[in-house]
Image (cartoon, rainbow, N blue to C red):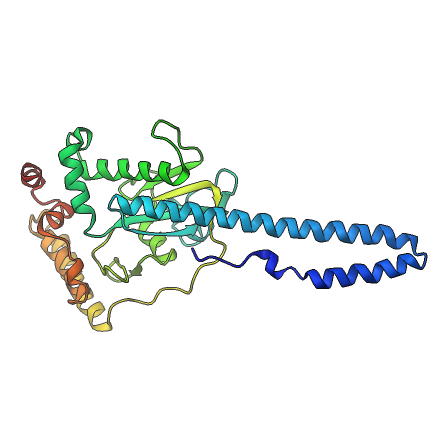
Length: 307
């Protein structure tokens, strides 16, 4: 969220003073009614200055919360994040994935969409070894992400570990229940975090390419979100990569349909579409073998035993 100049900078103080001096001269000439008019104008100008200052403070608070959240998430391996207002997301979200406004700012509130690159894996492995709650979970990676996210929120808001988190809702990308569903790729696109290719349904990060995963969205009901967004993202990959990815995706879809999704090797076709989108441009950010297998739910037990 880019910083904006103080609204006081746009307040024409010189013009206001000249306006008041003009009326003061009329008052000196005996215009008693003008006195009331001048007082009213002064009050109105002060109120306008107060309103703009308040909006600026609210925007600054939103930027501070967002920046703190980004830092806290990054320290825990969740290194992909951006922000958007709830209303901006809801304007493009399917009705089933819309998020109802609540709290002080309703649809003007701050939403942070977040996820990770391959950086997450080492953080997860460390937590798996050290944290019994993570290790014993049915899905330890999800457990780690949820724990890391809530710790990041507390840190960003200056709360201790045992304090409740007020006015904050978290929507997880893995949830598909009514009232919990979020169009996470669409949100990431609107937040300018990653470009969404509608043909292959792949999100492409400008730095990490297709090697990113979105974990959820944090809704800060009582924090003002951005009132304007940067220009829409352009696609980070070439037309050739898009074409290759589309062809690989069609192959994957055909096999999935023909086998009713029961082919144990199906994941390799999904991966082929992702590699085609990469086109060699983002190879340094490609997931390692264990992370790749975990992502596509391949032999997780062996990976857990190895950790």
